Length: 352
Image (cartoon, rainbow, N blue to C red; front, side, top):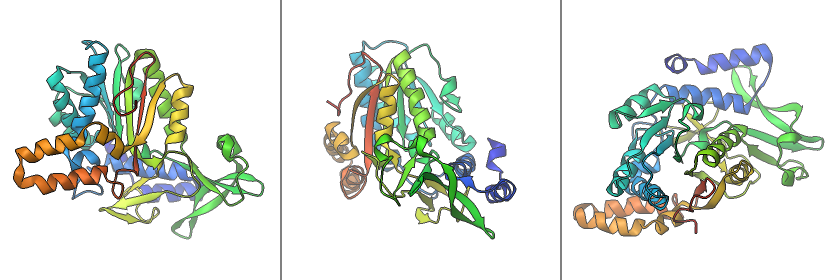
């Protein structure tokens, strides 16, 4: 991790392109984000972006109640694992497990994290947590309750362009010293969803084999071990044409080629793909809904009122935090919540 944090990403990628030719957007994005996340704490006002758990404790608390409800309905089994993908500073886990503890929910805590600096912060909050580079080392002796908040959006994507001759990858090459997009020459029809194979010339779609592979592993684990997963991210209910690729640095959008390894490069999550992969690998899909609607069903307004009564001077601040999470003009409809579970597990609140 420390070696990855020291990589000069622009120099490495430029040398690779000069020696071997244009690279895929997925490789460019993967190398850039690997260095980015390994080298810093990207969260908060001093970082590059703020996620829902950092906006309000209500977000994590309601997730914790959702998990505890499932656990109680499955008999409050003693051995169960809480797994969070990309847990940041551990804020979501702290709020979620704190709220769930009132039901005596005390799982083993597992964090999938590649950043050394964030691992340090997570261990300060959870001294007994277990860290993993990926899902492969997670325990297989008990059900898993998995949370992935703003994790899938940073996984590498391909952008595919429809020409008269079929679908081709959008590659990254060089124009002098500057990175630039280039058209690939290898047909990529084999990774295009069937409903898009005959799309009009000029159409562009985004797809993420990395996201599909991760969801397949989550679904397999839930099928074999039991448990449930919540995936919360920005994205579309159904695959759409067009680019959603973006880079954030210091809370501002920047050119995706301007700061490789120094900016957060993301794309909207294809929830249609994630649902299909989960079903194909044996998991049950509880449902897919808007974040705002899910939080309302989980009781965010009741929780807001309780916090306002406890902190009357902060009433307006708490209301603004709630609105940022829930309202359509903010995160409410842009962000989606996908719930999946193992066979014979109950469907969680908000998806009935």
